[in-house]
Length: 420
Ligand code: DP6
Image (cartoon, rainbow, N blue to C red; front, side):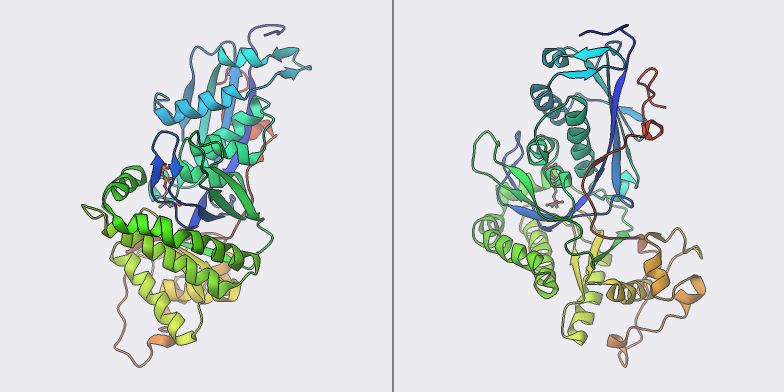
């Protein structure tokens, strides 16, 4: 390690999106390496609305590896963090900063300590795959800091060891996690199926559903399913392989009817596996079920799918509309059934607010004036469910990780490597 003084700090800041699976990952064949029992496919969400920003720094003055999440220091002792750090250090290469007169050799990386600061631009508690964006960002940022020569798919092998779904956040657009066959997990990685421009009509609305209940974590939930659900094994062996091929075709051809049918069916089957687990796991709640009914009723009256729905390990609904016009009709329906508790629409619809504007909704008075959706006309007056949705996020498919080269966006100080 050569440097003019021993006081230098080198940093890298990256931003990484989160993703939503349309063919779900549920079940591991290896708990430590995080190897799945089936392939999965996801859509990357626009990082302007949902992303993690991570700054990683190295300095000879650091005494130990340390990490801060949303400003609070957290322990790095967990096995998953340690696996990621170990794997990335193994692949580190020489780094030279001629301007600062610093040279770090491949071997030095084993002795140098790191500071890591990570920030989510959405509430961690909302259950929106923060660990996926987080571990992907960690692998990507450290890969850049340590001059790792490998591509995104190889970095996804490292992110995967932090959290399975994280490997799919190394790409934008549509991403497949290939389960792989090797025992060491070297072929269990993510590949991009199509970038975010391929199908840019799609609009995504996330209903963050109010919930008082602490859900079973994905990690322990899927372990219990592997141990007790026969349906899970049938799904992984007989159903998912065919569905993956069909989903790839649907994405390639921008075939919304197939995309929607496969997405909804796969989400419902994942939740059926949860019910088939002993003891059963309930991730969806009454509000989640209600959202499914509203969409299914709408589909039946239109005789073709308008919106795909999918739910992860929690009650939030991720709704993928075929285009902006459909998204406007969707937001009208959602606001009709789930009006805001407070009169403040600005904090009730976040993200790309222009979707609501397209639907003619500019203020609370417009929500109050919404007529019942035509598919329920002539039926018994429909109920409303104020308070059951905390807020909506309007977004779209988005790009993969990027570097933020502007130092003002770094979360650590360039002087001492501590949170700003
Ligand atoms: C329901 O990736 O959170 O969101 O690998 O144990 O960290 P670990 O689990 P995680 O599981 C995600 C499960 C899911 C479906 C999916 O994203 O494919």
